[in-house]
Image (cartoon, rainbow, N blue to C red; front, side):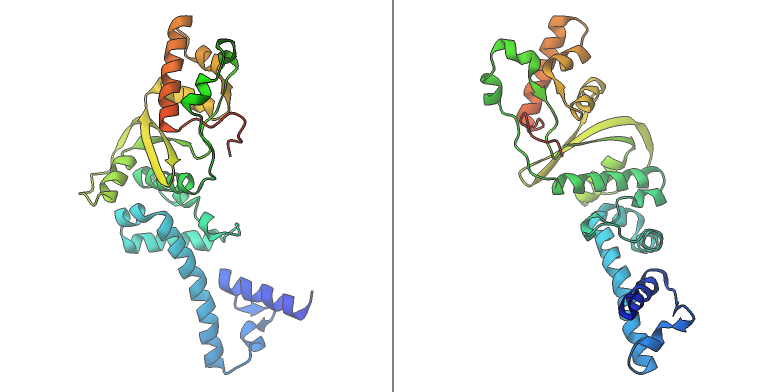
Amino acid sequence: MTALAAFQEALQRRVLHGEPSRGNRPIEADIAGRAQDVAGRLAIYEHAYRARLTEALTASYPVLRKRIGRAAFEALAADHIARNPPAHASIRWYGAELQRGLQGMHADLARWEWLLAEVFDAANGAAMTEADLASLAPQEWPFLELQLHRTARTYESTTNAVECWRAASAEGPPPDSRDAAPVAWVAWRQGLTVRFRSMPPQEAQAVARLAEGISFAELCAGLATSADAAALRAASLLKGWIGEGLIGKPGEAVR
C-alpha cells in the first residue's frame, strides 16, 4: 500500500469512526499546517460527512421528523449514521433501514415514507391499456401475462401510520398513535404523481401474486368460487387496475 493510500484509509476511519491515529502516529502529524488549523480542517470533513447524511435522512423522512421532533430525529440520525456507513454510490439510497431504530407507529411511518420515495424514483415503464385487451382474441385471454407496473409497491400497515402521514402532509392536527388491524396498500406512480390506496383482502392477495407475474387464467383460479364468478371478478379487477395504470405492459421487466 502506498503512503497516500494508507493516509486516505486513515482519514476515512477518522471521519467515519473517529479513530484518532494512523497506527501509533496521530493523523494530524501527516497534515501540513499549524495544529489549530489542522484540527479545524479535520473538523470540517467530520462535520460535513454527518451533516450531508442527516440532510439525506431528513429529505427521505420529512413526516417522521415532524412527528417525533427535530431533536429526537437528529439523535436518531446520529445513531443511524454511526452504525450504518453508506454502502451505495448514491446518497439517495441512504437510510433504507432507519426503521430498525424505531418501534410501533414510528417504524411503520418510516417504512411508508421510504416506500413512497421508492415509488417516486422507480424506473419508468409502459402500462397496459384497454387497447391492449381489445386486441386479444378470446382464446388468448387465459394466457395473457399480468404483472404490476414497474413503479408499484405493496405495503401492509399495522398502525395508523398512513393516517398520520396524511394529516402531516396536509398540515392538519396530528392524530394519536395507535395500533390498528392490518391494512394492505398499493402505491404506484402516474407520470410524476405518486398515488396509493388501500385494498380489500381478496384484491390484496391477487396483487401479491401479480408482483410475481401470473396469467389471467391463474388470476381467475386464485379468485375461484365458481368459474363464472371468478372470471367476472378477475375481469372487473383487471379493468380497474388498467384504468389506474397499475398493470405493466406484457414483456416489460417488473424492476
